[in-house]
Image 1 (tube, rainbow, N blue to C red):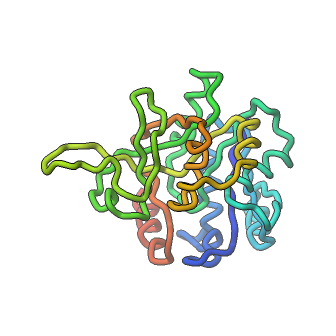
Image 2: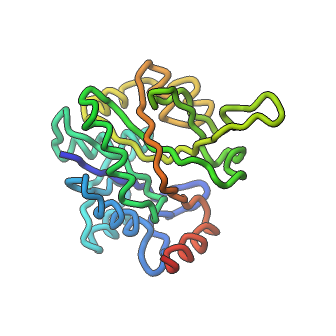
Length: 244
């Protein structure tokens, strides 16, 4: 079984109630849910939340939601709790879908899961997109990732990585798209690990995986997935939707 979970909470320091913000007449959480349902690789899609307003919004549009604890440390913990509630088996695949990227291409989920077919021992994968907007290279809002010659992550950072020391040095830069796939048993292990040092400094929970010696397969996708951070981003995404 492949379960896609969209962790969703109402509170946000920069955008309160973001999951329920309307985009071309639909709540953002509905947009994300509907995109996830289009993936041919996903068996079931569920929203994991601790807020009754979000739960009701999902059930009102016919989606599946589960209530999770208010004390979850991160979205990953919320995803793990939902997978446990739904009774997934240890080798089932759990996909963590970002709830603030309402126009992601469903094919990216298929790409994200594909390495598990080639490597049955794989524990975790994620997505990256080759940066074309030069602003994103140095913007701390856009997380960058570097990886080894086998496609496994070396580091994630809000800073520019790699950093060209010499003027004129050419380099490709990759933006991390915050989608993850895990084997269920590894997800259960991950949430038991203490917060890592680099994870705490950069505020990037995927660094916990690397800090404790595990590997993350990075899948390069040709599809970007813009996110909504602030209310001002809604119009930009809405315009993109209406043009498609």
